[in-house]
Picture 1 (cartoon, rainbow, N blue to C red):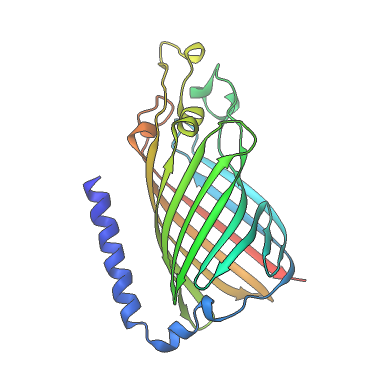
Picture 2 (cartoon, rainbow, N blue to C red; picture 1 turned 135 degrees about the vertical axis):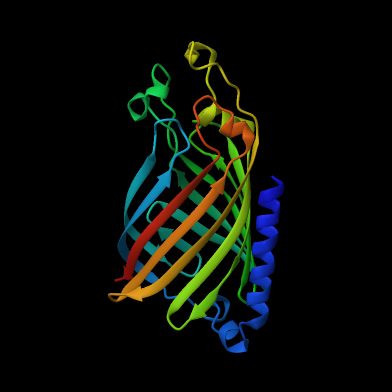
Length: 258
């Protein structure tokens, strides 16, 4: 934990230095000073998540993207948000987002004899505060389908830097997953326990992440690459289903307005 804290402090100082030396021209080009385009869009995307489960190396998620961006409503594939309030630099939105998680017996031998853990749909509230090129974002989402009956809250800090047409966004964040969410995806029920897989009750978890995203115009649309590194709480890494406490995820997409 001490190493992770030092890592985030170093990143924060680095971003502060970057911010102070970026110059007024780059600050004026921040997203907050420009209205994003509106209308219907289409595209493709793919997400690749390194899993921490034993014997389950990665999860690949192809996403055909059909969406819409309006003054308040934004639909980007299965992700939906609707702005409820805009007051100065603060905006509040309702949000829907799929949770690509879970497993079934065919994913790894460690899951043999266990009930399927399903992906789900989360919904909740997202709050953003923009100060020039900085973005502070907080959100709380709950499981709307009743699979885990869990809840997750996130807090992140990001900085937008433009180099010509290229938008670079480094980000650090922390998330809190309640015990229902952790136990559903990482717990082992009493009737699922074996000689090699003890029963396990998951407790709440405090997880950390840092990432970098790059966005650039391409073929008349916008291409985006995002990479994140995740550190997981011991309540997750101590599960008999997991084999590591860190993982990397990546997302690549291209979209274009009609």
